[in-house]
Every structure is written in structure tokens, then in C-alpha cells.
Image 1: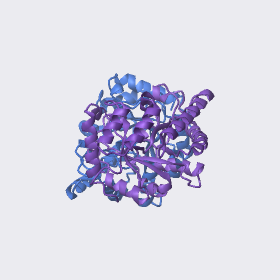
Image 2 (image 1 turned 90 degrees about the vertical axis):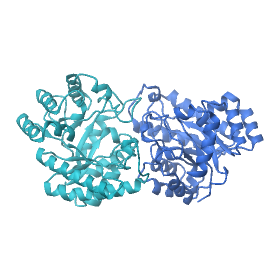
Image 3 (image 1 turned 45 degrees about the horizontal axis):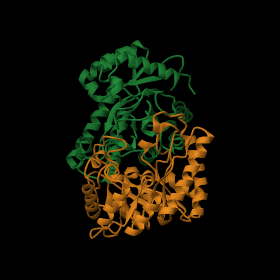
Image 4 (image 1 turned 30 degrees about the vertical axis):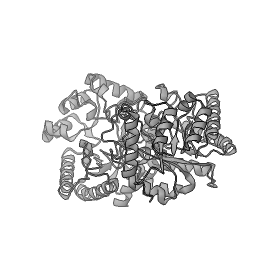
Length: 287
Length: 287
């Protein structure tokens, strides 16, 4: 297992972690000041700053992308919606190519309208079928662009509105169906927050192997958790066995960055420097 | 599939549904007035009313138990705690026998202390091992008493504090390990709230079969869901495919009651008669 205690060589910051405090250029500066060599930015942040300027700033700072957030949200209530989702995913692939990234993260989506509180359907089977078709179509395009796609299974508490892909096993089944050759073009983004509870986690991490493990995200599960979306914990403040899971991931061959992604009203209310310093400290001691 | 539109023959009320409004004797009366023939009471409600009086009232009203809530919570931080949990489960079995029930519902428990917000351990593997041992010991005792045990997998969002058994597959693996003969002494309580999201739900319901399906609980998943514990929806108000899942359960051989169990600050704030009348109406139209 890699020794993280001496520096930040393998640390990446998902820029949602301080999105309420800083613009993307300011986040990149703050990471560069700390010697952090990777980030995972969100499309809205990139759009706000201008993609060419972001690409230039990253290059100047020597910072690479451990992922780009995000494609996905394939299901829709009608054909026009499905087509619009595919078009939006092609744009995400184009942006990912422009920026250069180890993967485009896919959050599958689920029941159309559910995210807005107005589900137009209860048919999760249909949503899953639309997700499979959407990933297949996007994969063709992404292969051409040289952008690997990473399916991120989300916690089952987000299965109605954000992702009908809820387990690592389910994500890997899709990978096997669409990329049986394990070419590296399709894999998973494994986030401990979404998957720590899974009794099959160890077995499925081993199944994934290095060809499928395209990203590894960390934060922590707080006890109690007060919100289904924005109450993630800083590493070490919750009950996830971070060292144990990282050992599994590395034993399966993963050698990439460890990305901190914390959606938290509590951490968003603190100064960005405090948040990033804490991320660095916890990365070195408990991740 | 059974026709529920004409009456309440197969309806059961989990008494937590109106626990904030009524005592257990008043709940039994309210159910009897509606012709409801089954309930699933909680141990604290039974203790408050006196078990002998409850048993008598149930007999007089012709109401049976579709379950008894609950045993379980096996993991503990030390040997004394483990022994106390086993002793408490034996008492639950004794009470279940006194009342007569189709099963004692087991909520496994998970990290010791987590329910009180003070987890003494992060080792979910150890918790699972303690759960397996606890169920094995309780099963021996329950067989002697003639009380079937029903393991209830809880939603993964409750995996840290309430149950380290999170999927139907995991629960059935335990059943197969401890009761390979499918004797009817050990099975599962399947609650749609905890399991609707599971991509393997249909396959695992078929695997369970009638010998393992000891109870079937319904409510609904609201979009959005505002609380991890007490924001369950009334059947029909959310996105769970109730008819589809009941069809699967009945196709697997389940012919028992359909139990309504709603933990909801919103429904607890309404008059009990409104809640129960709504349960009956929704049972007849959308379950």
C-alpha cells in the first residue's frame, strides 16, 4: 500500500468540495499552492471560468484531472429528452478531451423528472435500460475522442433521483456487457461514500481490477447523517474503513489519485483554506 | 395476483404507523373497527399495555400478528454486551410465543454505539460476524419455541447504525447458511422501502420462495426524501412500483398479509383515523 504520510503526491481535490467558497481558478491556485497535482472539476465551474482559460491555467500549474464531473443523466420521458441527453454527453466528452482527463465520470440518472421532485415515471427498469443505451452510445463517441468513461454507482438513497446504478456489481455488469475486452475505455469511479456499506464490496473491487478502476473518491459517512445529499463527512470523522478499502483498491491494481469529494453544508460554511488544509492533513493520516 | 379492491382481508397494520397518536389497545380497537385482521406491534407498546392484556384483546378481536417488532441488534462492544443482546432476543422470542405470531422480525444491528451517535468501532465485518452468531444462537432458541425468525434487510442508508444486513441477497445467504433445509424457521421480512432500489430484487425474491418470505411490508419512497428515518411515504405518494413488487412476491409463493409500516413525522402529525382510513384506501387501490 502506498505511503501517503509524507506529501500530497496522490491527492486530488474534487472541486465541489469548496465550490461554495471559491471559483475554479481560485481553487486551482489554492491547490497549486499546496503542491496538489490533480483536481476533478465540474462542468458548470469550467463553463463559468471559460474552458480555454482553465486548460491554460491547469497546464501552467502542472495540475492534471483525475476525472471530469460529469456526464450521464441519460433517462428521459420522451425521445427528444433522450436525444438531448446524448448530445449533452457528447459535449461533456468534448470538454473532457479539451481539458485532458483520466476519465469522464458518469452519474447515470434515474426516473425522469425525479430530481426536480416531479417524477414522470416509476419504471426503474426502463430507466436502467435507457442508461445502458445511453452509455453504449456515449462510449462509441468517447472511444473516438480517447476519453475513458467511468460509471459511478451512487448510494441507493439516491436511486430515485440521481442514479439507478446503485452498486459496484451493477456498474461492472454494464462494463462487461459494453466493453467485454476490458479495453480501458469503460470502467467505474468508486466512491467510498456510495459503496462502503456493500457486503460484496471487496469481491467486486477484486473483480473490477485495474482496467476497470478509473477513479477512487473518498470522504466519510457521519453518524448520524442528517441529509441525503449534503452531509458527507471529512475523512476520519465518520465510520468508513478508509485504509481497508484503499488496500483493497490498490491490491486490485489501482495506482491513481485519491480524490477527496465532500458535499457538506458544514464544510462549505468554513474558509476554503481550512477545508483544503484539513483535506491534506487527513489524506496524510487516515486515508 | 390477489384482488385487494374489495376489502381488507390481507391488510396488516404495523403499529408504529400510528404510534405517536394512539396506545396499542387503542390501535387494536381502531383496526378491529375497520375489519383489519392483522397487526404487527412493537415490544415497547406491548410492554406499556401489559402482554397478557394485549394477548387477550387480540384474541377477543380476532386479530392475529403478521410479525412482532423486533429482535436483533446483536453486535456489541464487549462480551457482556453480546450476552445481553442474546438474552434480550430470548425474551423477544418468549413474548412472540405468548402473543402468537407468524414471525419475529430481526433488525440486525450494526456498529456498536452508532445508534447513539457514538460508534465504538468501524469494523462492519466484525458486526456482520456478530450478527451471524447472534442469529444462529437465537434460532436455536426460537425453534424450540416454534417462533420463525424473519431477518429484515434495511436500506443501506441505515447500515452504520441499524442494520449491517442491507440486501435481500445478503439476508438469504444467512438463511442458507443457518437453515439450509429451508424448514420455515428462518426467513426474511421484505420491506419495499428498504429494497425497491435493488437491481437484484426480482431475482432474489424468486430465490427466497415461499419458505423464506415470512413477511411483506409496504409504504412508499418520496421524492425528495427529507430524512433518513422518518420520511416514509403513504403507498401511492412515492415512486415504488408496489403492484410490480407484490406480483413478484406472490409469484414466489407468498400468500400472507401485506403490512403497512410508515415511519413519518408527517403522518404521525395527522389524526389516527385519517391515517388508518388512508392506509385502507391505498391498500385497496395501489398496493
